[in-house]
Each structure stands twice: as structure tokens, then as C-alpha cells.
Length: 350
Image: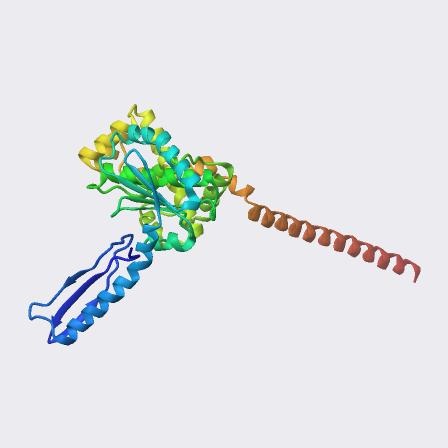
């Protein structure tokens, strides 16, 4: 199985041919598309083509061998692929599918029509081979859209079974989200925020401190910039996930106040589009919603940054520094008064 999606493009421009290898982000394929110039290839071109095909075949062999070594477990319309040593993990994933599938189907209001695959990567190398070359290093799971495939890490080498369940639910939400809104534009923060929410994540004190620190330092990420999430470094990506979840929680509360069910909101999105549905359901466009979200962050988490351990250390150091200056000045004033008193007594003696 190839780890990239190769397009071989041969163009004849002023009797010279150029070969391009673009790799669309987040895609893999098991073959190559070859486009030849209308004039017909020369013998040298044919040799180059055969050499490229051979290289592509060699690149595909490790992935093909890995897939042939996989065992399969069917749970409904989900096909779980796993290595023999991950048999218990595969059974646990099958139970997760059975337990959570109905909840996500009810939330998104649809059933998956086609078979989806779940691959339990037995090693970091296998995770990279199955994942896209553009997959960030900090990712713990992935939904690979072209193949309708969820890729998770085995707890034998990464995380734990509860962590795997959270990651799996996050990616399962992406799968349903795509099935529901494939033909529409929706902002990535909403997709990721829903995935975090449906994966069971809630804002804990540590998360709220991170949000508060971002607000206090002016480092919150504009919601539309979260579309570039895959290119963020780890700390910024974590903040993007927290912001997405907090924005989804605000939208949930706003819809509740307006008497709009989440299912009705999604149906309106499907019919009228994201911007129109947001405006009709909340009375706010995207810009007004983001302003309301920022105000909510400032109101709810304004002073929590003080509980950040780094902030506390700097505050303590600042207090100690100010106290030290005060004590030194106080001591110097006492010493100066004592010297002045001694000088006055000296004048009386002489």
C-alpha cells in the first residue's frame, strides 16, 4: 500500500518533458495515474516510465505485505483489521463500535451505507505507513477520508485502552461528519469541536487554565485559522482543539437558549448551508459568534491563568523581588537615620 498519492504528469513543452509528483494532503492510493503527451513517448521515455512504475511497485510492497498479514473482524458495517498480537484490542474496538454506533447515528441522523475500515496499527512504523505523509507527528489517530478508514494506535505501544476509545470516538465522529456534510463547507473548528465533544472530552481545570492563559497573553487562535490545524506545532494544536471544544459548547448553549435542537440545526445546515443555518438559529453570523465566544472566554476564565504553575512562579518571584527591594530600602533608611543621629551626637561632644 502506498503512503502517498502519486500523479505522474508528462507534459511536452517546447520539446522538453517534465515530470511532477504532487502529493495531495491526507490521501493515499494503491496505484498511479500516468498521462502521456499526445506526440507519443520516445524509447527513453518508456524506459523512464518503466523505472518509475518499478519504484512505485517497490514502495507499495511493504504496505501490501502488512495488509496481507492482518486479521479481520466484522462488526456491523465496520471491518476491523489487526495483527495477531492485538486480538483482544480488536475485540474491545468491536464492543466500542457496538456501544457507540447508535449514539452517533442518532446525533448525526444517518446510518453509514458502506463498509468502513478500522486499522489497529501494531507499531509506529505501521502507523506512519498507513497514515498519510502529511499526518502530523503529534497525531494519535486519523480518519483517512478517501478509503473511509479509521487508523488508531495499539495500546501495546501507545497510550491505553481508554485513550484508544477516546481517539476512536473522535475519528468516528469525523467519519459521520463527512457522511453528513460531505458536499458542504463547514469550518474545521466545528468538525474538531464536535469530535472532541462526542469523544467524551470536557473542559477540566487544566484546560480552562490554558484557555485563560491564551486570552490573557493575546494568543488565542482566530477560529478560521484552525483550518490549518494539521500544520500546527503540538502546543498550538492542543490549544486549537480546546478552542474548538469551547466554541462548540458555547454553540450548544446558544442553541438551547434559542430552543433549537442540535439535530434540527444539522438539518438546516444540510439544507441552507453553514452560514445561513448559524444566522437563522442563533441570530449571529460567523464574526458575531466569534466575538461572543471571545467575550465568554474572558468572562469565564479571565483570572484562571493565575493558577498556571509558570505564572505562579513568576508572580512569586515578582513578589519576592518587590519585597526584597522594600526590605533593602527600609534597612538603608534605618542605617541612614542611625548615621545621622551619630553625627549629631558627635557635634555635641566636640
